[in-house]
Length: 416
Image (cartoon, rainbow, N blue to C red; front, top):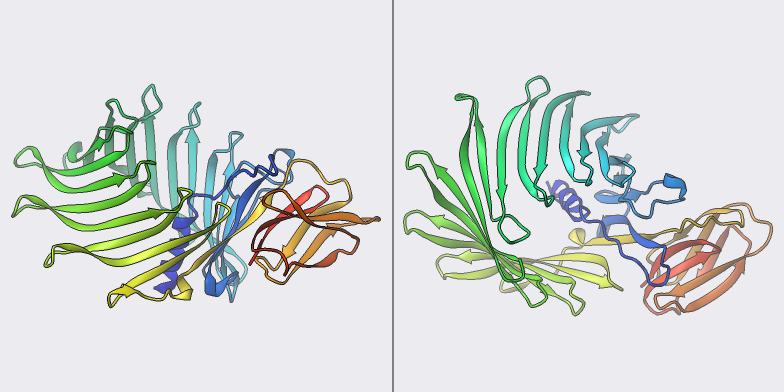
């Protein structure tokens, strides 16, 4: 159960790929290399990413998400992998999820195929679920858009491979805001072979276009009207960052909304999310009480770790190391090919506090220049090397992010 929770959380975290442009290397980006729990880096419950090679004639693909992600298993090596393919516009067109059977084969779990329109918006996404090496179930979503490329409708179908049927159909309507004012959801009735209204979702926005209220209602067939179900209340700061998100349920007896829980979001001076606090509502005391929080740590704008803590006995408990998540990064090299004969470089350990080992692949017949550069662009170390494996002392460097450059190839490392 613990491992399932931890792995699910890793998958949620990597949905958004951390990437930013460096003012030092205008053609290079930081890319996410691995996400791992602190106690098991590189082993159980860690994810690492393999990036595309030679796409568009470039050594690495500097504009695309990862091609393959891996969950590592200490006993068997790679346990789970997800493989993506892309079209010429960098849209993901296929995604295949597989697990390793512990012996010799990769076993399909699910695969997703997505088609796009001329504006690179998804038209249809079909997911096949596999069982015993054959497709057992299909889920299909079909999208349509208005003249402003906003969602107009969403059709969801699912079922066994030989009997895919309608499930739900959502209609979107808009006012003056970018987001929808209303979504009407219909469910498919096999008995009546027709669409039946089931839900309505309404949105209210502030002057900045932020959604401050989402109201979900259920259709009452007998009374032929919508009834309140639950709602979400959102509060934003002057920078339009979400600072409070509250869930309330409709109480039919007292005919009022009752708080259920809320999230409090705190940001650092750079506007990056620093703390997420989850609170439950105590009906007896009629107040919110702390339950859980997650603290994010950054270095030079990069998310480096997330640390969870539970609220116990009136205070935040010491974080359990097994649930701390660390993020590791690498450089996306430029399209300039190295002319020295060096095809690839690797560095380890990373992060490091004492020394850094630099290893290169390829053959050279003359010394090549190795440079270590800090985030400001200052060269803090320069050395000519010839050996394929070189040890560099970094204990005197200040903590932070550094770049190792060997001719035209670059790597990043973290100095603790």
